[in-house]
Amino acid sequence: MEINLISDTITRPTQKMLEAMLAAKVGDDVFGADPTVIQLQEKMAEMFGKEAALYFPSGTMANQTAIKIHTQPAEQMICDKWAHVYNFEGGGAAFNSGISCFLLDGERGMFTAEQVRSAINDPENYHIPITSLVAVENTTNKGGGACWDFKELQKIRKVCDENNLAYHLDGARLFNAMVATGENPKQYGELFDTISICLSKGLGAPIGSVLLGTKAVIKKAVRIRKLYGGAMRQVGYLAAAGIYALDHHVDRLAEDHNRAKKIGTALKNLRFIKKVEPIETNIIIFYVNDDVNENDFVAALKEKEILIISMGDGKLRMVTHLDFTEEMLEIVVKVLSKLKI
Image (cartoon, rainbow, N blue to C red; front, top):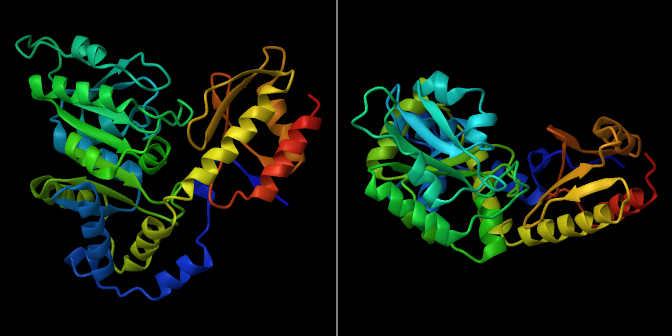
């Protein structure tokens, strides 16, 4: 039995999700005529208390669209040094929007309001870029699925308001954060100008992300999505999977979190593991001892049909998800307990 812990993006639709997809009513979404896409967009806008939403083929495209809306070329975005929008979106902020990034040295992908305040450039100094956007990621991917302190997010909002900055949330795994902390969507909707939500990670849909914002912002987003090649036709079959995921797969994220913590406990008991980052949601970040080659560790697990990845800089990652069962958990814990490197 192959056990894939590379990412929560590897899940496949459940039988009931497939049935919902097959039963979807569809139209041409380029003309705004796909009823299931409209239903998904309205559902998510209502859920977060935002005016409007737009369905995208990927989270990267949704994030890049938000950056494009909030900035002008030669301006600057503030984000963490580990942020997905900076590290894992192909340099899109520079290529698509022509902006630079001021990288904050946060803790596990999370920074403070005071760090933001200190990074804002003087708008009267024409030698340096104008700061126009702050982007945060919740949960943090490279930070091991860490959840932001909501009070700190509120403090950052205040700094943004005081300095006329836009505020974007890369909420690829935001539902994981809300399940872990007990926060609700409307709290986030009130706080951020734009939010991107991924449906194809922990929620288990095969594809798709949604961008939330005002009607004016989403009107601009429609044009930018077209420019980026993201306009889709009878995409309601996929939107139906997103609707099903929102209705049936949110609360069960707690199962992924619990299984991740059990793997973390097993890793801490191994003599060749140097450190396991705190586990709050479904991502396990850990480090092997300096005398152990991380690639050898990955290969040793692969021999046992357990797949994980290295994130570079000595980091290893496992991610629990919808397709990772209790039986698989028992196998992983047993293999780890007997592993020899």
